Length: 101
Image 1 (tube, rainbow, N blue to C red):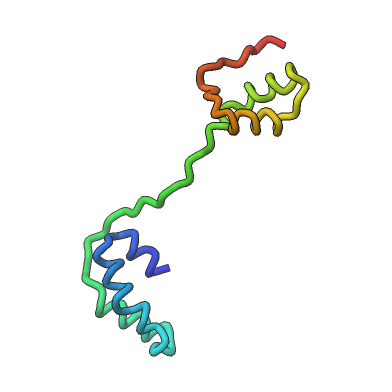
Image 2 (cartoon, one colour; image 1 turned 90 degrees about the vertical axis):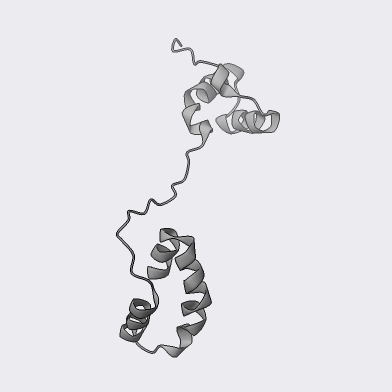
């Protein structure tokens, strides 16, 4: 967990960890020794909030109502409609769903 946090903090610290601590891992027997080594080898840095990279949502989730309407009108499954949309590169952002049934 410490390696992950340090690598997200800065690339220079990530390089330092890769060049020293990762290949020296087998020589430490306890977690206390490992912590002391980190404490002495890593530079002292100011606190900085780290923003994790989040997964982006797919556009198909936003167009679920359009796919549902097309599936009922064409008497196809949603899975088939999604397959056609992906294979034909259809942009659903141009279409607005009709709220009337």
